[in-house]
Length: 277
Image (cartoon, rainbow, N blue to C red; front, side, top):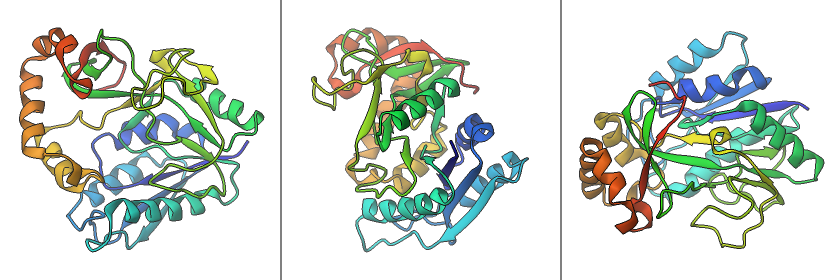
């Protein structure tokens, strides 16, 4: 099976860890970026730094740079994002069977497991793979993180969209696609609070073989940039969220202990993961 990938270059925080995790397992990586170094909504992004990290990783000349105009403050942000992703996916799909579409803050913890899930999706006739992400929120120390969890500190999966799709797939919204999916979860029943309780599960994977989603694991300066450049920036009260983020960084144990009393998006547990700092 021929596997390619695409990357949207603009957020360098975890790019090296993300691309480095799957670099040996794909034949080509399309790197899409705004040629002016702007976000979808028109704010400056760290595009040049992201490209430097990509070039440093590309020891086998697998990377193909794909500059474009992907900033338009006058249009819905997620529409602009979807169009950029589609162009990158179309380019990555040339000569491929499947395309990985991982964000640069997503790090597979076990590529053998992820590749096996893609093979299973291929064999069963699915056109996309839903594979569970673990939402990490803060790095407490070394390999210790605050991780979003259930009310009683149970594992939760997150599915922002298929992490791999067949070449030729049309995206409907961001990286989501209205295609038959092969769905992997951390249990034989759905563990994602944003999916219906009866959502189908085709295969189960251990939590230590999921994908680490490090979207909020970054420096204070990187968090401030995220507040202006992320696709969902306008949907969050960032001054409030940044204050909460900083408080939880200083008080991780209290954050964990009070989890059973908190609303769904404010529940955390301490976990150890082999993700380098």
